Image: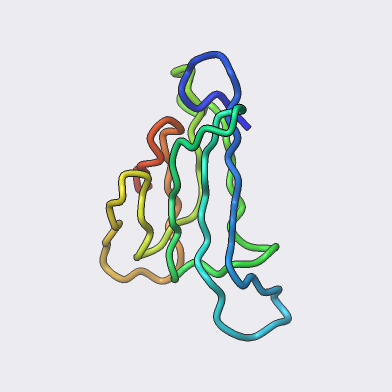
Length: 114
């Protein structure tokens, strides 16, 4: 939870995954999404972390806080090639060894790669 849009009220960021698996379970998982909602249930944005982020209870930690002090919370998480931001844009970078961190301004869901 955090004040994503600077209106003085908290919003909720939640993680949804498909076919999540624990470390002890082999196999392919589904996609992982981060979604933001106002407390009245109004949808704000969705970030699809894509097929390159493993789904499961022990993966994809994220933080919601006002990291830059502008009065609006950001969301920080790992991303990878194939991530789709809150505006529907695919993040395409050269292949890297593993996930890449990103910070999403909470009111847009559009990440800045670190």
